[in-house]
Length: 228
Ligand code: SAH
Image (tube, rainbow, N blue to C red; front, side, top):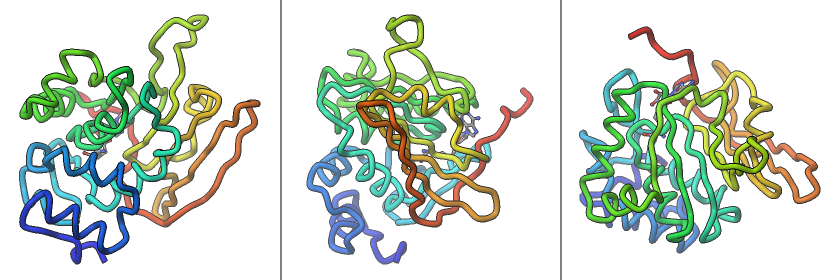
């Protein structure tokens, strides 16, 4: 299924993903059309497969980015705050930024400084990306994503996130990430070792939490930071 959606341009790739049923939402389609993967993926950007980006990391396949964005979509309103853990190339961070409005905020966090620098560089390749970095819609930070990221006042606990995306496989759905969700909020997280599944974890308005095991996947692991 993956390779079938490859195209010779960004527009052709997105069109093929949509005609193969891998993008079903018009909002996600438009967001992915507005972000050129070539700015984030140095090799074969329009192939529907993961590609190396250095530092032992990969940019995920386009159909996985589409699937994550579609899963989080009900929580992505114009002023939504989104955390992208394991932001790597910064591609999905950019797509999520295209989905929120000017009042929204997307923070990408990665534990490798070289990748934080790369994401900033990639985002700076387009007028749109430069504007988002300037007006604060997008920000990349270095840190251990297993701890989430706190920002904003709200009794020192941070403002919380409407949506959290995790782009590397976790050993468990870290409770601290669920804690950092707003009510309502959604966490999209691959969990597992040799066998991994996406878990979609929702915190409802009354604070109750539901967990749904979704598709089987293959992600690089969420790890300790490499020694410099
Ligand atoms: N969403 C990214 C995926 C990059 S691969 C993209 O499509 O480009 C997974 C990323 O997770 C790598 O960049 C890796 O450095 C990062 N990562 C692994 N463990 C981490 C941790 N504990 N905290 C933050 N980032 C981590």
